[in-house]
Image 1 (tube, rainbow, N blue to C red):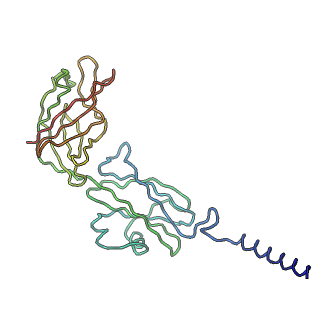
Image 2: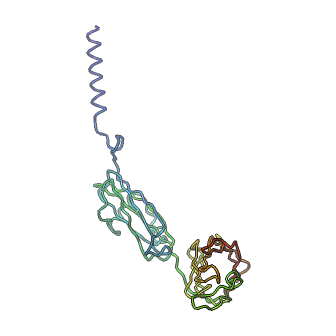
Image 3: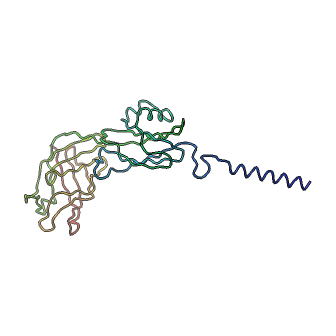
Length: 260
């Protein structure tokens, strides 16, 4: 009886060892049974327009053989009411293959010149198996709405001048607006060509640091940083900036934009 028990124990042990060694993709370290691509979105870098160019990074798992992407207006994406494999198949049929992206890989790329609300879908393929992930992007779409008067309190009060030595006071600016993102953009504040944008709904100013082109009579170049905006009425916007020169900060002062 003892010998029989020992033989039974050894047989069970061998079966356990065989089970432990058997491949089971998706459960063992490094094994994946279903293709998968993860999508990351970042702010566009130098040489690109962050308002309309979408910077993506796609990373795949070990089961992925190929990857496709499709950028389309969100209205079209929602109208089809697709998800899962049906959406993945649509992306493969109508999108573009991301060259050089297979198993356990990562690739950065841009989708440029997007105006409006976009959905970007990425499909990972392995044989007949397909999965899909999506991300969204709001491409600003500015349209000119008129002009305004910009009152630069700080540069005027400090006697700052432009590159030609002209005093900086109230100036006419071009005003544009994008319904996408509820964003205004003005051109010509402080000095010719200087441009920045702002969103009354969020109170944010873009970019966070602006080279004004103004020159302080003693300390040189003036920048406006960490700006916020508040809306006084339908046509009046107040900007609170921290004003800086090479020697340091002058503190916070307000500029005002009056729409015509």
